[in-house]
Length: 253
Length: 218
Image (cartoon, rainbow over the protein chains, first blue to last red):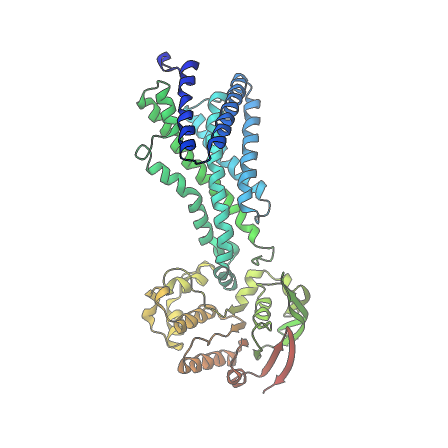
């Protein structure tokens, strides 16, 4: 890293005066946001400093079991959050966990195999975090779509069941739409990469002194892994979850 | 032995009791009309017969065996149900006729489709028409043909002529009667008193989830 780009504490303190601008605006325009702004800045400082120290500690742990354990905790948390979007889906937590884990394991394995990253906490944890949170958002969207479609398209599903179709052909259109809904935001953001905004990771690397060409390589890797994880997680979750809308006698619940 | 038998069947959804202790025997070759005011449970009886719903009490026998013992897919292919509002899926009319073949892993039998189209007074060219462009009457006949592609043993019809004009209503009634004459058992829900007596041999009237009267017509 280029040492000239390292941010000093004094520079950071001067930069904090930017918060004052926001406060002045709020005060003179009577927006009533002063208290909120101070609280949010305070929280940002405390949270980030804490996370910084935690990450320092985590990255210092070279034990792969520790890294794996942490990935599992992240996956569980993401699964728990995604499940909230599909509360009528039975065994939602288990389904979400399996789906996110599948997406993460496959994607990380390919990245590791390609040599793009190594099983080191300072690489695995941030990348795992990106993948897992992306999968979580995708699953939330999938579940919402599944739940509304199984309500709105009840007639279509029952018509197909009445014709003697199994539950998969009877609900395949709903499944396709739900998987699509989960994947579209990632595809859309990939389409506009570098045009609408420079992605956060790339900006961070460039600010830290990495050449844009190298930063792009990392960004491309991130884009590929996001696409693969959302696809795997959405597909797995939808195919596991649609069954829960039927009972054992293949009737729509 | 009856072909289909309901033994003290009750059905309740989350909100209310829809059917109360319905007992009904359907013999092979019967043509039964079901009448009754809206909400009396007519459609629910049909959905129970083809196992889209399960009774909350009582049981339903098909050929003497509880329908729970049958594979639901196999059962629904033998006891076919045509719903009140014809739901057409896919993009074209052909998609709707391909579906029953697709789920049986077969290629669409266009000759059979064309025969049925002409019997129900529809032009063969309609296959390529988009579903959205069809009239209510066309949709209703297409949904009916879709149910009839693989001759079921029992045909459950839920007001399948409600969107048809007089001429097409008569045509559909005659076709259904012809199917009955060739051995297909019919359970027909209708609102029309005239239609209910025209070809049926048994007329059942429902009220508030119970069978009010049972009349033998022929």
